[in-house]
Amino acid sequence: MNSIILSFENVTFTYMQEDESVKPAVKDLSFSIQDGEWIALVGHNGSGKSTIAKLMNGLLFPQIGKVEAMGKLMTEESLWDIRSQMGMVFQNPDNQFVGATVQDDVAFALENNGVPHEEMVVRVKEALQQVKMADYLDHEPHHLSGGQKQRVAIAGALAMRPRLLILDEATSMLDPQGRMEVIETIRELRKATGLTVISITHDLEEAALADRILVMNAGEKQLEGKPEAVFRSGNELTNLGLDLPFSMRMTHLLREVGVELQGEHMTEDELVDELWTFYSRK
Amino acid sequence: MMEKMIFGRFIPGDSLIHRMDPRAKISFVFVFIAIVFIANSAETYGILLGFTLLVVFLSKIRLYFLINGLKPVFILLIFTFLLHIFFTREGELLVDIGFIKIYEEGLRQGIFISIRFLVLVFVTSILTLTTSPISITDGIEVLLGPFKRVKLPVHELALMMSISLRFIPTLMDETGKILKAQMARGSDIGSGPVKERIKAVVPLLIPLFVSAFKRAEDLATAMEVRGYRGGEGRTRYRQLNWRLIDSLSLVVLAGLAGILVYFRL
Ligand SMILES: Nc1ncnc2c1ncn2[C@@H]1O[C@H](COP(=O)(O)OP(=O)(O)OP(=O)(O)O)[C@@H](O)[C@H]1O
Ligand SMILES: [Mg+2]
Image 1 (cartoon, each protein chain N blue to C red):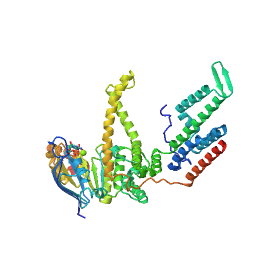
Image 2 (image 1 turned 60 degrees about the vertical axis):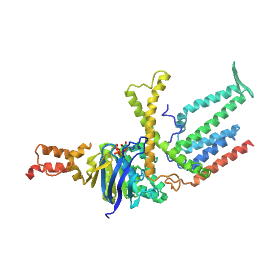
Image 3 (image 1 turned 180 degrees about the vertical axis):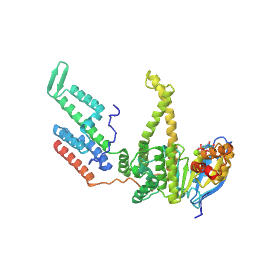
Image 4 (image 1 turned 90 degrees about the horizontal axis):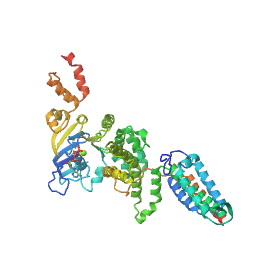
């Protein structure tokens, strides 16, 4: 099981521009991702996250270093094969809806890859069931909420039965309700299929759900580790312009005023649990 | 008035005509347009009108709704009718009130042209009213298929058309938002001299263009990520199925043409 699904080796990428003085958007980056992991990639605006996502599926190629995915080196030749095993969902729900209706959109990647019609019908239905949108087959995009559109986009990726799903700030344009819908969908998917997920996000509450967090700063990897470990370096994150999850900030503040909490609480539920059992444990 | 206008709108339903194959419907309309020009007498125009009303009846779209929705077209119709009546000076003089002189031939021509116009508008409206834009696109793509041989980018054209259709509501929303944003900053598009109004449109169009380009760029990336690389080796999710009724409709149309030619001979 523990095989590497994606790896970056000393990758440097610079957007080519007129003036030669531009800094690389990604600098000497190395990391690898195991099959079945959930990775969160966080960092402030312009820290290179989207560039990394584009390097992952061959929309961009690094000037230095190499990218390997699904056991293959990313090249012009292997690109389409790798892409067919990799789903990607972007930020703006409107700008990635290609089809006229939900089912057309989900079928788009299947059509591109020449999947026969009977197989398509099965896969479209299956993918829409996985994101709980099966009742919306014939709906047009402008009659769907943002969260629903993003779930359709996820279904469009899932229809190819990918091994890896990349979400580039897929929840950042949604209201809290839509955000919950999408996060919940991802959690359930992982439970059901063991899909590898890379989610790029500003939201550390979302990142807290991941197995591992990579923190980017100005194109370089600043921190890497389990959410607990990354969050423990509190000030360093705040300096990078990232907000700790509410429950962790609350824990820190409570400690400052002398409440002797034990854990580092990454979710509100954990914090509430400790608080309401606080006196009885004393 | 714009809301009531039904030209180019789609009304979902499940009539016989709704369920027909878009290829059959599109071919039908084109052949019909040609056939209309065979008619030249009271009988033939009568047959055409009767046939058209039958089509409307089969589509289960209410005649009243159709007429109401095509009001602007009727103004044009009445105008051409009057033109013919007053300016054709042939045949017997029917009415002569001072400067108004109506001749038999003028009345005849006026009525014929009106029927021809009416029949064409009705049948094409029935096509768009009973066929979703995406089905029309599918139909056109398949019908134009043979032209791929002469390097006509049929698949690309059809995809462009379906994406444009898909983005119309999105861009309409966007226009509304920009308009409100501009109004909130004191811009006034609704009044003033024409020159001022045109000037006020510019700050509306520029943000709209910028955002449309941004959307196009995002969409292109999303398509590429999902493995799009042109029509080569692609399969189709939407299947068109040609049924007996579709063949029959064309046979009926051939019959109509036969009858019209017979009367003309
Ligand atoms: N197409 C481009 N051409 C030139 N420079 C670019 C391009 N896209 C991004 N950049 C630059 O590369 C750097 C990294 O951008 P990137 O989009 O990867 O950041 P990001 O972490 O995704 O930011 P955000 O959180 O805003 O999405 C930025 O300095 C940006 O200005
Ligand atoms: Mg980004």
